[in-house]
Length: 153
Image 1 (tube, helix red, strand yellow):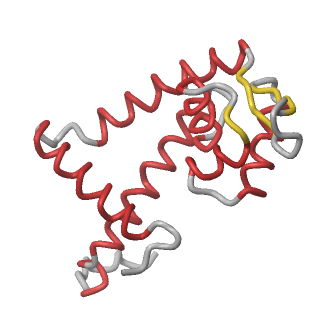
Image 2 (image 1 turned 180 degrees about the vertical axis):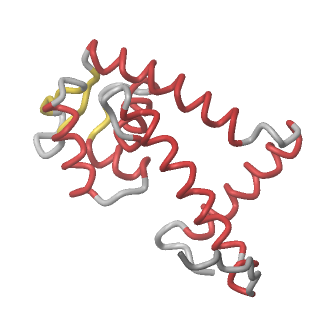
C-alpha cells in the first residue's frame, strides 16, 4: 500500500470558490444521507418547505425559488407526486399554469425534513458565534445575488 500523499496547499486550495464548493458538497452529502433515512432527498425537502411557506405555488415559481430549470423542477415534482407528497392542480385563472399543493404526508415529511436540516445546520456552524453566522449569511447572500443568472456587472 502506498504511503499517504503529503498535505500540499496549492493556490487552488486557497480559492474562496473552491472552499465554498467543498463546504456546499459536504453539507449536501450529509443532508442527503440524513434525509434518506426519511425517504426524501434534500431537493425534495426544499420544495416541501417552500410549499409549507406558501402552498399552491406554480411549478415555474418553485423553479425560480429553488434556482433550478423548469424541466428539473418538473421531474422533481413528478417524484414528489409519485411519493404522495404533493399534488398538482390546474390554475383556475391561468390554464397554462399548474399549481402544486402539499398533501398531509408532504406536510409530515416537511416537518421531519426541517428538523433534520436544522440539526445539520446547528452542527455545521457550531463553531461560529451568532454574529459570525450572521456575517457569513450576509456575505453568501451577496455572492448569490452577484452570481444569479442574468447578473453580470
